[in-house]
Length: 262
Picture (cartoon, rainbow, N blue to C red):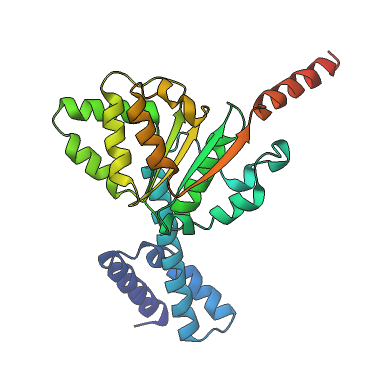
């Protein structure tokens, strides 16, 4: 057998074995990495380490991608894209500390309070993305979306299963608490999810309402107080202010376009 034929046979064997062992990255990259190892006169051990590192890295990237998809973010937002200079109300050092995720290990929660356009959803999403990158199970939903899902599950007699599923998620993001009043019967269902997670798993809540006005969402005052009590227990409360930087940016862009010559 010629050297070329022997090499081809070995490559076919590696290709078959990596397919059987479900090592797609090694299967795709063993040839170019072998060429690189030959050029750089690497040892066989160094070549093997490079192959395994490539497989592990790509598997980690695929898992992270899957977690980001499973989280159901409407848009991906990252901390590096947030302009803290636009909203000096937000404590940058606090957000940076929260990005490490230790508050999730402690089963704490985060409540972001402020008017529309002050960065609440961006920060909530960005911190949740950090959690995904740390290998945590995350789910993003609006409060109205959660209420609708729970009511539909209740009508199908699947409520217990859905609540149990939400209880297993390490971080639940509840966006837009305060924009819509919950429909009749939904407030109690949402409360069940919040109670099930209380001191067991973390939440991020964004709201445009001060706590004293949560009866606009949870009409029963006792239920509203119970929700506030559970959410604020062991919570990092961050006020994002009242001035919409999104509105300011839109206004500035409009003025710039008007100044441009026709």
